[in-house]
Image (cartoon, rainbow, N blue to C red; front, side, top):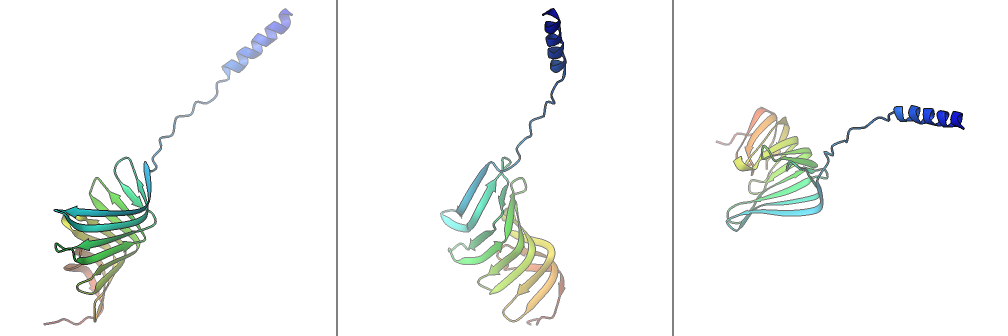
Length: 173
């Protein structure tokens, strides 16, 4: 009996000495919230300035937001008239910089001038009411199509500069 007790204690000691690995907990970095079919209105002085539609939104702890299924924005003037629209296949809002990035098929339309901008990536700074990109752009006007690389513009496309323009277009005097 003493011999079996000795073997039992020895085996218990050997198994207790065999420590299992302790794994570090993995910190979750995914979204804190998820919203579907979002419709948001941004207004100032009781006037709607921007309307936003998105099928899916992920919001992170740091305030960033991801729009994996795309985004659609409408911009209104002081009288409430639609000035321009912006559509992108996917978007991301960087809270720290108060800046947006649209990717994929990005399209901006100036309703009043009947112009349309197309590019694969576009940034928007709401505080400055400015859009910009370093990517290839196409601007369709009523009579002309302008191509180029890089763009700086007002968010409603009422004034813009193509950094490296190409193509032929008529110059009005």
